[in-house]
Image 1 (spheres, rainbow over the protein chains, first blue to last red):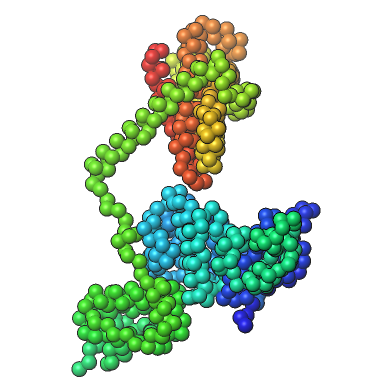
Image 2: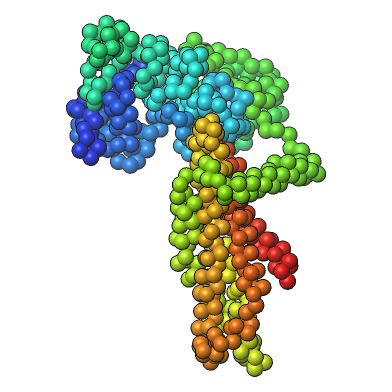
Amino acid sequence: MTKNVIEVSELSAAFDERKVLHRVNFSVPGQQVTVILGGSGSGKTTILKHLLGLYPVDEGRVRIFDRDLASLSEEEQRLLYQQMGVFYQNGALLNNLNVLENIALPLQQHTQLPEDLIAEMVRMKLRLVGLHDAALLFPSQLSGGMLKRAALARAIAMDPPLLFCDEPGAGLDPVSLARLDQLILNLKEQLGITVIMVTHEVSSILRTADHIVFLDEGQIVLEGSKEEALASDLPVVRDFFGKGTGAY
Amino acid sequence: MPNTFKVKKKVVYHSLRYEPQNGVLYLQGKLTREQAGEVLHWEARLESKHLPAVLCLDYSGVRELDSAGSTAVHILRRRLKERGLHLEERGLSPEWEERLNLFSPADPQATAAAKKESLPYRLGSWIQEFWTKHARGFMLLMADMLFWGLRDLFKRGQRRKGEAVNQAVGIGVNAVPIVMVLAFIIGLVLALQSAAQLRNFGANIFIVDLIVIAMMAEMGPLITAIVVAGRSGSSIAAEIATMKVTNETDALQTMGINPLRFVVVPKLYGALLTLPFLTVLANVAGIAGGATAAYAYLDIGPEVFFNRMPAVLYQKDIVTGLVKSLAFATLVVLTGTWFGFQVDKGAEGVGKAATRSVVASIALVIVADLVLGLLFY
């Protein structure tokens, strides 16, 4: 039984008067791929932003590596960020830096490593994501799939034990998506990292998920293994996996 | 006598320990990003003349190994081999071996920077690119814009109703306060600087000639064009660049709508419609500024100043100013459009387009001012 890396309890969130999360409780087991899924507007991205500390926790509690997110000082938050890699949906690479410089950035900012070692590490990370021939290109010169892989290389630049992936499959063809999933699985298997993925790509979920958190209208309707999700009788879950009547 | 390494200065390393008598380098503890740099530091301080023929790398003490540590080990192996050493390895657990394989180095050739060409070659390439990509394209855009501008004058075509008026308000009417304030100040300063010289020669009254001709034929249109280039030229470039980045121009194209006619032609009308009026207002404000300075420093009252004005004001100067304002309006819209359409993907490109548009349109306005000044001289 692996230890929980993240624990969310009674988390609620609202924008103006509109409640988007209602007393959400779930945990993320270490060294597994946890997929947070649900339809559009179910609150997936809001949860992710709370986990990343981008939204303040007003109601409830979020604990990452046994630390309460709300009680962290700025310095503690900065150190925590070094333990996290975030793979954004649109890549979020800096446009005025080439791919090599983008990936080297966190290493240059947070480590004392010599430049030649950093350069070699970046090349190695690029090879890992199959992008070694695009190191000197700028983000505007990359295709959608290349952009995703470059973003993943940057997310794992610091070897984070915790990797967040926000809609990694959005805009990718099935073959590229399968490769990306395999890459994420390799990282999990070989480095033992914990992956939290927000997605609604069913094929990707079936390939990668160990643990599933299913959201509907800001509430968790199911938390469990992939098998439990697939065997669920809940109409919203059955519809999501293409097994329902579509009546929901 | 065993081979020994000599290290220049005693340094304490946490992630390695060297036993020269045995020729063994023990890698130990945490080989992670906090300490991986030590490995390369140690290697860099070795003196080549004391290198052993065979060096054994012992990994049995390694407790943690991340990508930084793995990369450092790969670089160490490579550099020691380049120095002619024969390497032996021991104590490498399957886990660390797998980790080292996962983080194996990339082919440096693939990421090497392109070879730098010679200066004449680069200069030639730049000139060729400037002509084929920029100068020719700019002229084609100008022809296209003038064609659609003239054609849509008589037929609305793909313009939205009221759009030209909206643009006229945005480009011209909203710029009235800033143009008038700047023109007043420039007229004031111009008169102020000239007053001292004219007074020396007892030619105080010629301040009227100087201010009126300078403002009507030169400064009025120029100030107006520069302000509009800064305000509206950048805004046109940024708007078109954003549309291009977000594929809006592609969407228009695929809907069978010419983006130039739909987006740019109304802006051209707006600028052409308002810049002459804006220029007249700038002239009035500039002359008022000059009259203020003339009254304050040369004792030339408003009555004298304005009575002399008709004597020095020729129709040609008025026409020159207005023709210039029309030319400047076209140039500002054209430059903004050109740089807007030149943008690649990305938010950074939008900012660059706006900046380049302002710089280029101000430069072009000044060059055009010279050309028209010579023509009307």
